[in-house]
Length: 411
Ligand SMILES: NC(=[NH2+])NCCC[C@H](N)C(=O)O
Image (cartoon, rainbow, N blue to C red):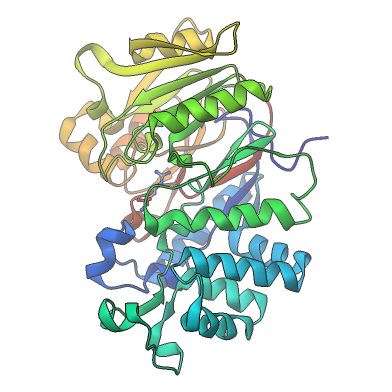
């Protein structure tokens, strides 16, 4: 029986995927808050939703079952019962800065007066101060945040379901995320795994949970094969966390025997490995030429376990060669974003031209706006399914970022 989470590749036919339809959270903020919320603009919600529905329809039309994060959280809380719901809210408020006190109590009363669906949608969208009719007289409100409009910040990045957790084999990592704007997001996934009837008590492994100190995000975690995982050393994922998860995967006999760490530039445009590099077929990859030095050089390290159980780390710098070695292939095709033209590559990478979602070997979903890269992919023999992208791209994430595969067919 296939487990409810089962992912042994980046490219096996996509059977079940989790998405989050953008809601009020993607426009419930001011331009001033954008950098902190990791957005570059404020999307126009009705169009963002239309585009997202187009994305979901494309996945369904190609045989994937689409589950929505917001529904799964509600179903998990309802299955858990009132005590679970209260404990969930308590922890969410604590992680939002209200461990105790009058605001904690006021928010708790306000949110518990709602149905579970309303509460979950509200937590995601954010709670403004003017929603509650009481005057906060605590020190933080009086001394530091008198002009700040929110008690609970919105979570606009939730539609990038790729990042808070990553499916790896018959389990997942539930991630300790880098920036405060996203840290609460992975608590939703933890709740689903613990209480949703589809996932709880199904023998799924949490290889690494969100309470671990090192930072890691799913955009950096790529399942290259049933034995090899690639992880970006990036703005969002620390080398220490990579060693930690490698150790856990090896010790717990996950099936993964090798981790390939790939160091990429640490900046907002390339926040995760999957913004510059994705696997799209047995032997084909997209790569942003901007991350490669002369002759395709980039720092990579293979991590394996030696006989004594210690980690063994080996440095390499030829990406093509190291991929051939870890996958046992004679040749591979690295397809440059924007066809290699540096200006087009930078422009299309900015709008996630390298962030390609494979839904079967050689079949990819991409943003329609990256027409040069899409054409190049077609010339390399891929089947390219384009989706609408004017508003969704404002959050700096593409089809891979917006999807968390839960089940893929084995190759
Ligand atoms: N897997 C990805 N590349 N996700 C993109 C996430 C974008 C989001 N605005 C962030 O900065 O976190």
